[in-house]
Length: 229
Ligand SMILES: O=C(O)COP(=O)(O)O
Ligand SMILES: [Mg+2]
Image (cartoon, rainbow, N blue to C red; front, side, top):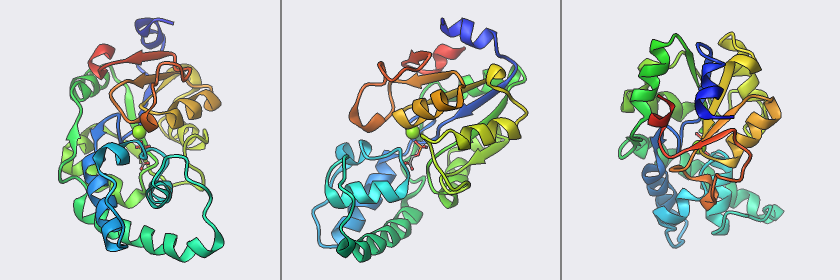
C-alpha cells in the first residue's frame, strides 16, 4: 500500500510511536551509561557504534549484550546471574544521570507530530525503555506535549515484539486495527505490529540492531517522518 493510501484510510485515528531510534537519538546517552557500567566492572568500553546496535529490546537485554560484547548474547550461565544483576543496577544508576543529556529529536519528527495532531489523531508512545526513564526523556526533549499516553518497557509483563503493549495503547486511545498505525525503527516494532495486525511504518535512520529495515515486512519504509506529511 502507498504511504498516502495507508494514512488517508486511517486518519484521524491513533498513531503509536516507538521512542529510541524513532523519535529520539538516545544512543549517545545509552552508550555513555553502558560504557560507564563496563568500566566500573573493569571491562573495556564498547563505544557508541556498538551500543547503538544493542538498543531496542529494553535495558536488561542491552546489559546482557554489553556483557557478552555482541548482539546475539548467549543466555547467561547461572554463575553469571550475580554479575548481571550488579551490571543492571549500575546501568540504571548511570543512565539515570545521562538520560536526555545528549539526546536529540530526529529531524522530521516535530512537523509530523504537529501535522497528525492538527488532523485530530491521538498520539501514543510504546517503548521498551524502562518506565522510569521515559517521562524524564520526554520532558527533556519537549516531546511530552504531543503524547496522551506512554507505555514503557515494564508497564506490562511483556515487551515488543509481543503485540500486547501496542494493543493496550491502541485500546486506551480508542483505536482499532483499522484506525491505527505503528511507527518504529526496529524488528521489535515491526514484529509487534504484524502480530497485532496493525499497519506499520519503519524508519531507516534508527537502530534496528545494525540491520536494514527494508525487508522486515513493514507496510511502508521512510527516510524521515517528514515523508508522512
Ligand atoms: O530501551 C530500548 O531498548 C529502546 O526502546 P524503544 O526502541 O522500544 O524505544
Ligand atoms: Mg526503537
